[in-house]
Image (cartoon, rainbow, N blue to C red):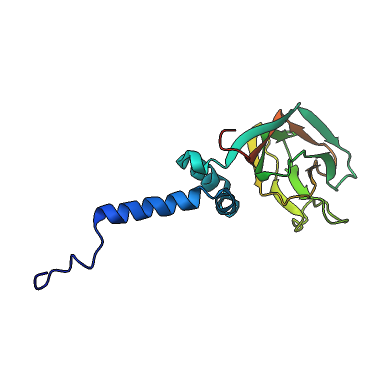
Length: 195
């Protein structure tokens, strides 16, 4: 080895590449480890991980259900939010998304709201008009627009908890809330990469 030559200290490119490949293979062939990594990622990051390799295909996007359009008319004295329906989330859900289109009565004050509430607490509910969002609300959109526009609610469900959609029309009289067809999508963990 000549003076100033440090090539003997550095591994060859071929050795470095093989070590990195072996390390990656070791990590990604451990399904529990890949699931753990995915559980700490956002939904977008988890999808990108799933697209990276057959070995990292641990999540997939799936539509769970579609609901028909629905409308509510708000009585003048109804300021509270109303529970609409429970969401059927499988235990192996990484992330959930409720998407659709909505609007209010088309004029006046805008009070409409749609929210997802974690029902694990006995007093869990969405807020009334102009009230702050309590901790049990995991996703919400407000106020409803006057013209039909899209909404998207996204959240990371906790396993073994129930989630319910709540809506608020708004009190004071003349308020309406109209939901077009809505879809519930989930990013779910898959048991087999071939799924």
